[in-house]
Amino acid sequence: MTIYAIVNNLISSYEHPYINKPVWTIISSAAILQGGNPFFVPDFASRFEARTALAVKIGKLGKGIAPRFAERYVDSVAPAILFVATDLLESVKSSGLPWTPAISYDRSLALGKFFDISLEECKNIDISISLECQGASLKSTWNANSLMPAIEDTIAQISRDNALKMGDIILVGINNTGHEVRPDMRANLSINGNLSLAFNIR
Image (cartoon, rainbow, N blue to C red; front, side, top):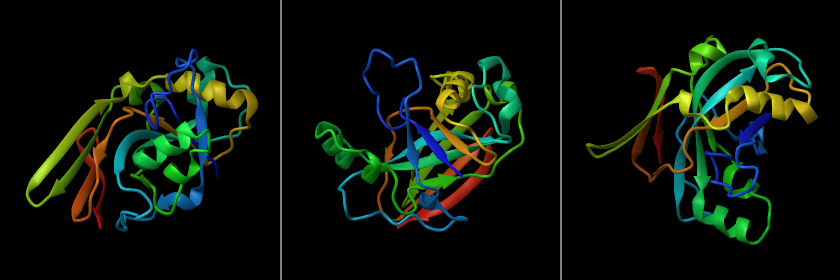
């Protein structure tokens, strides 16, 4: 399984002449937070943010997929959270170093439950994240229709140079800013008002 994280609107605003085209990086499958286990805030950076994404799972082998055929290759979708070490990210970006240490580390990716849904239907779903701490709650909701680049274009761009395989996941970001996470919080991730994943932050 390969996890493609789209840089646009997930990790960075990525100011570049080709901003309307998907730019991606790879996240290790070992980074997935398993089954509601807690996310332990690491100590290698001072600030971590929860960035919300739509996880698109590929259902069959494909290469050179045209945007109009992209829906045939989507198996299911799920809400997701990528925990980004924002201060470390800015440091490696300014130094021209790989972004991997800031985004792909143990338990940096929380995946909600996958739902069978057509690509057309998923454009109208709402994804929300709430972080609760001592009675206070931060909540944000995004509509998947605002995804940029569009999922079809993203699949077409990635498959131009990479064979997409069954089980591969594409993380399409909804907003490149997120909520800061701290120990003693609880994260709730929902899709269309249905709770998809809940876990503690320690």
